[in-house]
Length: 338
Image (cartoon, rainbow, N blue to C red; front, top):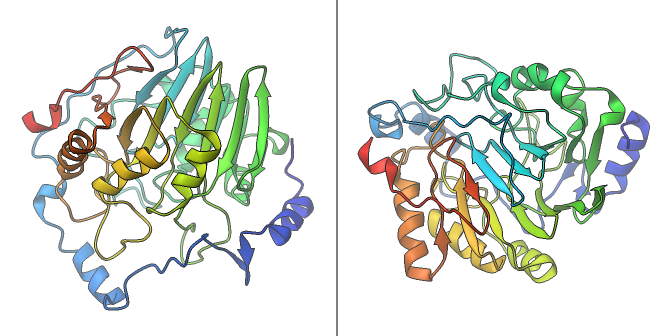
């Protein structure tokens, strides 16, 4: 267990992923295509069509997380990229954002009506929290401060600890991981940080901390925690090393032709699941916040259609509806009736 500032700085300096003063992707990853200007991107941000948000409140399922128990992994998704993984009494919470906003200013990037049905008070005791990277829609300090008394350990990407200390727990409860590092959490539970194609930053500075996906091996099951990532060859490398996966949880939403390298189109999400050798795909990173200009439910339509075409099982639970690995994969197209 670590978080001595001097040792973290040394680990960052010696990381193979840290060059020229910032963390780097495995492949060249420009923030935008050459023919797109930042002015054009900013202009489109302030001219989003109305259908980026649902026309009526979402209809979540309210599950009692504190009494939840299963011998098989259960995943309860809370919208966007926040979800609980439970198995045999062990609770893992990923990227919790429950403050109603995905921005440093609460009046910006507000949650869709109905999408914020879950709060920190609904969470069970958290044995392990995973923070994939430090963007506001994945690392929410208001939420983390409220979860502080109920969180035992936090695993995150290298360099993210500095964003956690002011709001979370003691230094020795935070473990920062570089890509391909593995930690044994408990008997029959290990976690490995793996590559993603993305970036980090809060405010103007980018690349000061790492962004990761994670492989969770728990009681004989293999789960992939995708974080944020554009499509690239790393998915096949992870699949070759750790696959097949019982379930891959992958981003599917907030894509745009203006940033094609740092987020996946829905069809790429299906291809990534195939590369990972996943048995089932759970698409996340949608249905809570509007960060792009596509219709709020377009990603669900496209990923399910692509799944049928490619022979990939895609599970599409409502917010709060349990997915039980190997047993129950909700597939209702509930977003069509909103």
